[in-house]
Image 1 (cartoon, helix red, strand yellow):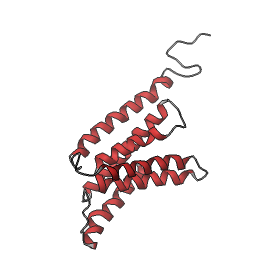
Image 2 (spheres, rainbow, N blue to C red; image 1 turned 135 degrees about the horizontal axis):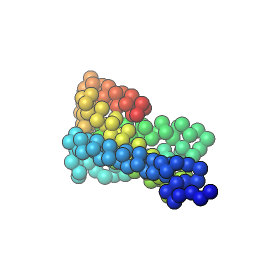
Image 3 (cartoon, rainbow, N blue to C red; image 1 turned 45 degrees about the vertical axis):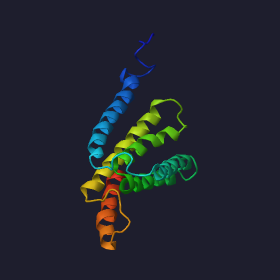
Image 4 (tube, rainbow, N blue to C red; image 1 turned 180 degrees about the vertical axis):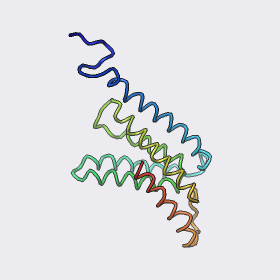
Length: 168
């Protein structure tokens, strides 16, 4: 029997468009969250690009570590990198880093998989970043915080962001 051009062999018409529609919906959610996160993030040019580059390189390293035998270490490392970027650069930059890390993942080639992974990473980082801010997190962190302020304005909000990002 012949199959219709919009139908994958042995599958339904949704098998072709479903992942793309879902990824597109994630992109729309990311954009909406990014607009909200921009209100709670430092303006562009407020921070030095060298630390951003260092965090971005660490995210790329986490992707490369995922290919090793201890694959969970890479995912945990990426979560730590994204969490660290929230108090340093704000929820928007965390969301951008969460979106872009998947570009370094060459495992799937040119397919929808890295786009989906990046969208999920971006949404997860934005949700964590917004949770950090909602929990009273300080953006950007200043160097002269008292220990109690460091705990209340950075540590505990990071724990809340970690819980959200782990569950997202």
